Every structure is written in structure tokens, then in C-alpha cells.
Image (cartoon, rainbow, N blue to C red; front, side, top):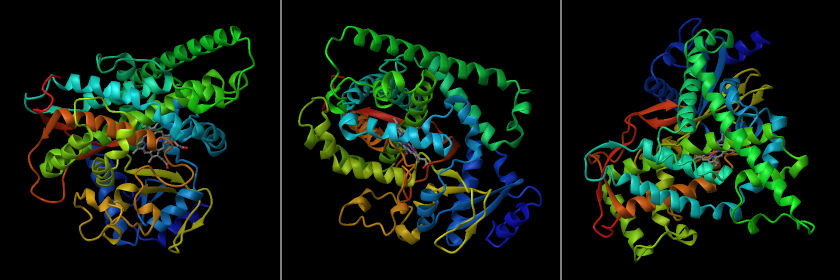
Length: 491
Ligand code: HEM
């Protein structure tokens, strides 16, 4: 089997520099910025080789794929996640996102209706209230020079996700030292280290490192917190049921305005006969992990891009002034009217996708539409970052920040996978509508009150130093300056 794999791999283009025995592993030994840089370089090399590049990480074979036609097939047929995700499974267990296919299928069926537009729309009010809090927090920094926006943005998304997922106001925005937030940041950092540093991978060896103790403590904090919330919810539902005299009507998603994902998952999985408390914990933690940093990263990159291109920011502001004639709060109907802001967000997600690559496992040899054969046992890194910057599909100005490329008359994708910040195929992101609503609500709330200022980018191609930290994040923690807009001075 191994000989077969090595033979097929040898027939495919490899990187310019490979070391015997190590392959490209030495390129992933540096810090998270250097690792991201290597991933970008391999994506470019993959473009030069018609979208598929081979790379050995020690004994393990990977392919970096940027060809959108091949990607469509990979994302449809290779549904199993790569073994590298086993480190994150220690936290979220078999929660949908990284679960083995048979478990994922059942969970996905239950999760999809919980994310129906009817349900998600009801969360806009939460995004509005949390964005309002965020803007108030930011007032401490406005007019005071450069500061890192990351702690503000990630606590906003964590508060929103926790309120919509479990109905708990954890108030991370008011308390950045909240144990849950600390535990989540620390554990994700450790998981990332394990993914890229081969010596931290075997469990027996990892246990000997001092960080193991912290790793276990973080998991315990996150599990204990979620378990308590679930137990409380079960008791609440039991009390409700005991006091109910009439037969329950069929469950209507839209009618339950105050429902959280936890309520929905309990009902959709079959109430008392449905998910166990452990399964619920896994699903809820999955949503928290999948929904928090991703959206915060998207907001951060967009703010920096608007700071770098003030004329684009002015156009966004003009649109906001037209939609919000006075100082009123946003309502869900406004989101559809913010067309230019939407183009800006989409373009930001193209150039700086929060999830720059997805890794899937090849269980059986597959022949890609381009004719290349990926052998069973290898991993495929689907490079979203690469496919979003390929001049073959985005033109010679592929690296330019140009929100108007998403104008309906200009946006005409030849291949569905040329643009996929939320992935594609049966395992794509269930939270994409939720994410777009949350991101647009926050950005519009911030940009109505503040002007974002950065050094103006002279080139049409924005450059932001990035690192890989599970997501792709800005190295500088999203440093910006804010200046209060005159129109609403009373914040
Ligand atoms: C800008 C924000 C976001 C981005 C860029 C993003 C991106 C992604 C990507 C690329 C995947 C797919 C991985 C794959 O194909 O293997 C994914 C899966 C997923 N995302 Fe998101 N996501 C975002 C926000 C959210 C939010 C807010 C939630 C929930 C509140 C969420 C929940 C999920 C879940 C549950 C999955 C797993 C789906 C499955 O395996 O069936 N995401 N996301």
C-alpha cells in the first residue's frame, strides 16, 4: 500500500525544495507567521503546477490543491477530516465539524434546520445589543492612537455566540479575563502548536511537556461550564413540561423567538430521546469554537482594509448614512440594504479568508477531473487562500482589493469553488448566514460611530502580515486607530 502511495506521489509535481526523509517538514518548524508564509508559498507553487502540488511531511503525504474543478470533487467525495484534527477533538469530541463521517451525517441533519434563515434572523437583535456594547468598549480607545482591536472583536463574537448558542450572557466584553475565554484562547493556541510541531503530536510525549497540565485544565474549564448550562436547561425544560397541560404542538422553528441553538438541538434531536448531555456539549462547543474566532477575524481584516483604503471606507459610510438617516438601532431589514458593505465583506473574505485551508483525508485513490490521481492514505489541503488569489480565475489584478468585483454585473464565477470562504459541498459551513449577519451588524455599528485610520496603502494590493493560529489572523492583533465621527457624538 505504501509503495503504491509513493509511486503515485512521485508522478505528481512536488515543491522546488524537498529534503530527503523530511520532505517539507522543515518549512513548518518556525513560528506561526513563518508557517503561514510557507502555506502561501506552496499555494503559489500549486498554481504554477495547474493547481495540485505534492508535499511530504515526514512520512505523511499531503497535496495542496488550488484548482477549483479538482476542489469541487475533493470537497464532495473526501468528507472525512484529516487526522490532524484529532487534537481539537479532545475539546469538542464528536461535535459535527471534525467528527467521523457516520457521526457527522446524523449531526449535520439535526444542525441544518437549526440554522434556517427564520431562526438566524431572530439572532440579529443579539448581534445589535452586543455590537452596541462593543462600540461603547471601543470608546475607551478612540482618539488615543493605535491599539489592538482583537480583544474587543473576539469578546464580541464570543458573547454573541454564547448568547445565541446557550442563552448565557457570559459578558466576556466586560471581563476579558473570563475563565471560559482564557481557556478557549489557550487551548486553541496549544492545539495549533500540536498540529504543526511533530514532537508534540504523540499523546505519550505530549504528556511530558509542562503545557499538558494547562491543556487538561482548559478542557475541564470549558466542559464544566457547558455541562452546567446543559443541566440547567434540562431542568428548566422538565419544569416547563411538568406544568404543561395541553399536548405540545408541532415544533415550529420560527415561532420560538427566544430559542437558542441548545433549545433547538434538544428538540430537533428528539427531546428526551434525542442527544445525550455529552452530545449536546460537543455540539454546543463546536458552535462556539467554529463561530467565535472566524467571525472576529473577518471583522478585523475588514476594518484594517477600510483603514488602508479610506475612499472605500467613505463609500461604506455614505451608504450607512443613507440607510440610517438618524441614530436609530439596526433592524434585520437593514442588513439587506447594506449592499456596498456586503461587497466589502465578501472581498475581504476573498483576500483574507479566516479559514485559509481545509484538510481532508483520501480514503480511496481518487482521479481528479484534471487527471491527477491522489492515492489513498494521503491528506488534501484545499487552499482557500490560493484559489481566491489565482489570476486564472480572478484576473491579472487578483491581489487587488476591489469590492466592486462582487457587483452582480461583474461577478460571474466560472467555477463554484473559485470563491469559497465558507467552503463548498456537503460539509460546508452551516453558519455562513449567521456569520454574515453578525459581521455586517458589527461593522455597520462600528463604522457609523468611528472612522478607522491606518497608514494609507499606496499599492492597490493590500499587504497585512498574517499568521496561522487555527484561523489565519493578523500578526499585529488588528492594530488600528479610531476617530469618532461627528454625526453621533453622544456615545
Ligand atoms: C466568517 C466566519 C466563518 C467562516 C469563514 C467559516 C468557515 C468555515 C469553513 C471553511 C468550514 C468548512 C470546513 C470544511 O469544509 O471542511 C466551516 C464549517 C463549519 N462552520 Fe463555519 N465559518 C464561519 C462562521 C461560522 C459560524 C458563526 C458558525 C456557527 C455559529 C459556524 C459553524 C460551522 C460549523 C458547525 C461547521 C461544520 C459543518 C460540518 O462539518 O458539517 N461557522 N466553517
